[in-house]
Image 1 (cartoon, rainbow, N blue to C red):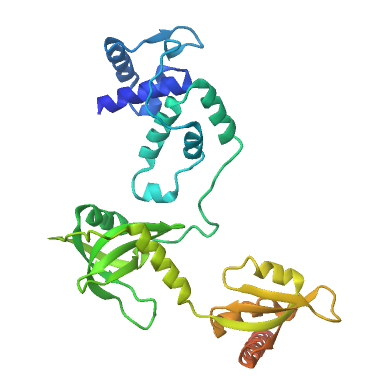
Image 2 (cartoon, one colour; image 1 turned 90 degrees about the vertical axis):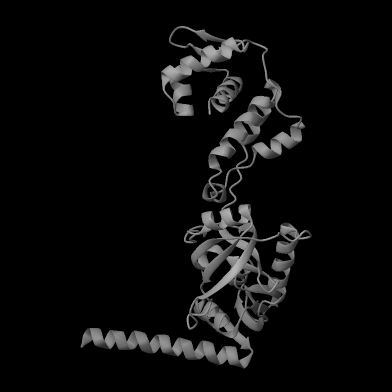
Length: 329
């Protein structure tokens, strides 16, 4: 819309001081002729915009002219300026809106705060994405989002976590979207009145119906999600083991996702080794994890874990020897 574009031109000039016709045209994705017409419209509306000729010229606002778009305090502005749009905004189609909002915020700052903002943003960068940020499909996110906005029921085919169980079809009332890291979830109410959380990437197919539902009056998305996360953590499987390991390995384990070092103490007679009590998810995950450290992580207890690690290690050796013999044969 032209009104939005005129405001964007005004904010660009206020933020950057001076911009050429070609720079504005590229920024707003319009022709240079359109920019000239927009400048005439701004001038007619009483905005003190003028053109400077020459190689270093461009469009500018009369010195001292500013819009006042916000009542934010300086610290509040700084906290917003440090933020960066996440992939989640792009998936919701809001990336351009973020750029527009940031432009308006910058334009609303007095010159002294603009200088401070530039100083801070050149020295602090916040990257909210995790290291393992790829591979989570959100193919049905847009449709689920529409159903949330319109309060319409969804019929979804939802994949089970078990490879032995086929996907099931269910009808849900989508109440809100949550993104954790780079993974999208939809909080929903079932037709039986229960509240459930569904991972968007496990939705194999979705169909938005015309059946409108009434949103629960007392439902609070943030409170529901916090309670759901807490319940998930509380009910996670726990498998505790005692191992003897090199201190470097235990240090790495303290930062691992699949193992938690509960306590550790130096191992008598072995420099740089310790006995540690480790918490894993399951017996199988503990064995797989510890095998990766080879002889530098020895299971003391329980016996079942010790035996499984030995069994899997022997199986690995056997497999390699068989492969070697086949190659020689």
